[in-house]
Image (cartoon, rainbow, N blue to C red):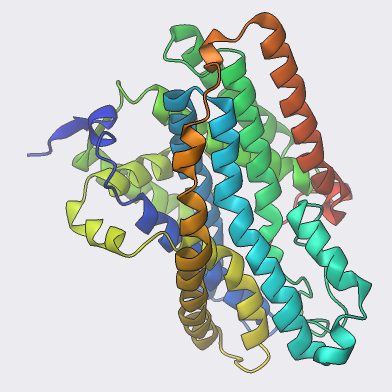
Length: 393
């Protein structure tokens, strides 16, 4: 009655529901932000409002678990670090560049007028900070959103630095031979996951918020990696999915979302939803609008919150307008940029598995330098000296 499928069999079909899941995750974040923008009027003591606000937490979790699986799967299959890094760059930066330019040259001009907008050095500082991921979510522009509860121009970008760090750690794992189907690699990944879980649970009330989030994202990303490494052993079953989904919903409703049981049950639910229901495949005819929704949702919601003062209508209007920007971004920026992947694949380079010792050493140093670059804004964030608190999603 409940047929089981090996995850490795399901994932052979590239036509899956992962794009749809990411779009849903981005919409969850927009809903959460809509309540956040109007938090002075929103009644967080009301259970429904609180649950809707926490949807942003689920959305970010979905992004990191799926990213851990899909990106590790891509690196394992290609074994080419140049291709891997180029693909990550093409997926993230072109859309972010255009998003930043729109914010500076449209939102800035709208709020400050054409004459004053270019007089602000902070506009150029914002571009610089976003494109180099130097505290992108904390930078503001004078006169823009200054009277709002959260004056950040694009507060949603805070997770991107963490995601780039995850990409670098994944590359180091591949360089050191950890990202393989071998037993030792699997034992290491499980051990690495458990280590982060233990540290997070033992010290969670004594950690700066940025460290807490780093450990949380590491756990989520590593869960995705583990699903990839064990895909020949993991069976996806509808009955198990219903149990896992019920556990996820129960833990979410009770606020027990910091447990590893919540993360694993959510992960299993994601992979069932991502690869089993074939009737959801219709969405793939449209495109992957999730990234556009994520990076445009915050500034659009911020702007609309000046005129719309009901969380429900703010969420609806933000989603509709964000979809418009996301579609244009996908058609004109992201998809053309991703088409360059075919040319990137033509770049021949020594497979990671064939690296000699000195090559492994050099690449590890390069990845560590990139981690330092990406982790610097995290360490400079205001929350570095603040103990754990509920973050903005």
